[in-house]
Amino acid sequence: MGADSILPQQTPAMDVHIFFLPFLSPGHMIPMVDLACVCAARGAKATVVTTPGNFPLIRPILDLTNSGSSLPDPVRLLSLPFLSPDSGLPDGFENLLAFPNPDVTPEMSAAIELLQRPFVDLIRQHRPDCVISDLHFPWARDVLGVPRIVFHGTGCFSQIVLGTLSLLGTQKVASHGDEPFAVPGLPHNVELTCSRLPRFLITPDEALIRMGEAYGKSDGAVMNSFYYLEPDYADLMKQWGGMKVWLVGPVSVYNRDIKHRAVRGGVASVGYDDILNWLDGKKAGSVIYVCFGSLGRFTVAQLREIALGLENSEHPFIWVMRYDGDLSEFLPAGFGERKKGMVINGWAPQLAILSHGSVGGFVTHCGWNSLLEGASAGVPMITWPLFAEQFINEKLIVHVLRIGVAIGSDKCCNYAEERTAVAAEEVRKAVGELMGGGEEAVGRRERAKEIGEKAKRAVEEGGSSYDEVGSLIEHLRSLKMN
Ligand code: UDP
Image 1: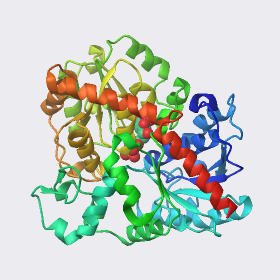
Image 2 (image 1 turned 30 degrees about the vertical axis):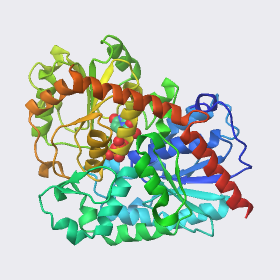
Image 3 (image 1 turned 45 degrees about the vertical axis):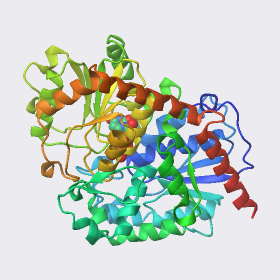
């Protein structure tokens, strides 16, 4: 992301030095690195602080950004030692990506706690003017008096829904059992069931309470979202708790250059050229892209259903999955020879794929970044939420924005074995519904396209998020002066 490719003009930021401390998971780290690059392009001095095991995820995009760009100051990368021998974690387990499911294990929590001391040392040594840190690092608040802004890994809609439900009380929420209930007081009718809510909402643990307390005492919050996408909820978010909130996204859109899109989040398992050649040979809008984020895993039985459903659909596909065994355990015989789709086992250049004109639909787990990336690419989505706040994001896609078809996933759960299975026929049907003709499908596509245009507009000069980045940096500058 060269500065030229980010923004037409830079705003001098009077040497505001920002430390960016992302949570150790791709879905948090990738957008925060984007944000560091955006702030650097607007004249701030940006330093990303993370553990050495996470450098391979970040280095490719930072090297590209810093080389050949006219950034006033390169984005720096500082190392926080990860004390794995003390934590009992195997080597390389410095990111949730390495774990078999999205649980933050007690060992990982302990290792994250241990980052505090070296982080304080770095603050002492480099004296930044502000820390923008993930919600998951409550101890990053008020380190040696340095202001802390919280980075939200998700959007305003889910925050407002979760906040409303917490205020309602866990007992009241749990009393609904499996019966659908409407979340009270929202601008839209949003119906949920308890089984679709994350466990942390029903039984909040100490870590969550601590996070919430530190959040409340922070100096503001940055959301990776844009006003047009969720205006009612953005307004509510800005009113909530009297805290300053800036909507600066979608930060992925700042990656205008295809080279940046191809290496964002690390080096892909299949070369982008091969993917590009394959996509180039397909009709505009004909390909369905299937990816469940960085942490979505499935049982072999479920993978078999997905494979069958995709093969039986009438559309070419790119299917990204993460499976450690032999793919023949679930791919139907002759799957490869029939060449109906491309299978990527590992890491895909998602942003690059989604921006290709042949892609006309996205099967997504509704992780916030994937939602934003699909919406920014202007493609409608099949929603297949798995865990965390993804079922709430599904509501935004399907019921509020009306750009998606729900596949029928109904249990929010970190463990693949415990989720309700989705049959091959459901996959085939949903792909047909999303990618086919008919009034509803056309309407969905048109709305998605319009949102994509608004997303791009939001980060251009004069756009809402462009202005919010300026206002954020201005605010940090005034904090520094005071
Ligand atoms: N991603 C990617 N390639 C992959 C899988 C994921 O580039 O093969 C990126 C994706 O573009 C997004 C992030 O990883 O930016 C995943 O974040 P999201 O919030 O969608 O889901 P999570 O992984 O946190 O569940």
